[in-house]
Length: 199
Ligand SMILES: N[C@@H](CCC(=O)N[C@@H](CS)C(=O)NCC(=O)O)C(=O)O
Image 1 (spheres, rainbow, N blue to C red):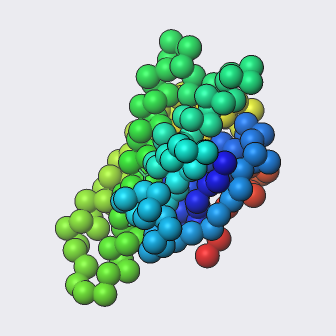
Image 2: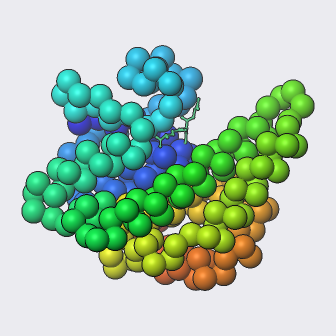
């Protein structure tokens, strides 16, 4: 299998974390790419990172790629990080979806800030509100823990790590001190440290 990734992409980081947690890193060839790559666009018509190639199967979108890799983990006799058999399955997926929305709002903000022509205060303010409100309302019961991470744990770490990396002036910890405390319990895990974004 090949994973097309970048060291700054929070979406790719979700997959990188899942590969480590599920001990599948050795099965993957990591291919560094960027969103302007022609090779990437052949795999993903949207030109977005990450993409996974397994023989004649090509998958784009971190959520789908993580689900595929999770399925391989389950087939090998392990518990799913998607928690499909649990009665709180949809609550975990809801927390995962919210974390994905935080990633999207943060990435949009970074892209908008890079725009050479005039930036949109309207959109920057809208995404900041989404970030602040989303962070305040995350369901702490569903985002797992250092001992028992799930798919929402991974996505939240990717979102919060990206905020520290690119938008640290937002000081998200002030929006939800309990979430900041939760995050500090994860920061020393190898799968968190080894995947930290790098410029
Ligand atoms: N929903 C997608 C989002 C992927 C995404 O937006 N990737 C960003 C990097 S984090 C990207 O490649 N952006 C380039 C672009 O949008 O052209 C996923 O979870 O994989």
